[in-house]
Image (cartoon, rainbow, N blue to C red; front, side):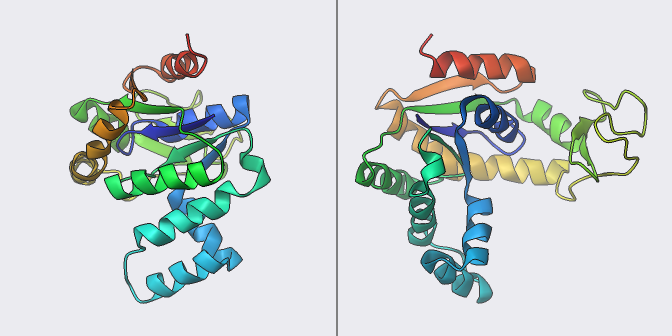
Length: 216
């Protein structure tokens, strides 16, 4: 099974992808992580990307698609993949069709996590993580059981992403609407899009996604 998870930053894609990885053995393909891994590994496409990045340029659709293709050829993707952050444009959507077809695969579902912008800002601005183990928390919705102490590892240091602020979230939302949302009609026309309320609690969102994937 091959799926695309869509939604602006903070919609919960990473959380839901982690669940699908652990429960279904799928592989999450995050373009940012894959790009860094390909560069570090010195793969042919990774070397191209390194050259572009070193000169301060933007990595092209062709290079990003090449990295996706390299990753799809790895045996651990046999149980299915979750595309996270790709495709972002109509050109990338077309490229993905080709990458899958070349490997005898198809795209099964496109799941969009819908959000309320004001609520999303509240969600993102309040989040922080344990500096030691990375467990996520929130100022209002998920505080440690003991204030200032991580529930998982007992550490007492926490950190926030410097870009988790209202202005950045608004900019991300605008970028998502401008660049990513236009690919939805492509998949809508093929009957692949399913929409889930990304503002619901994590378990509810997970159950909704599971129902879609199980054809219920």
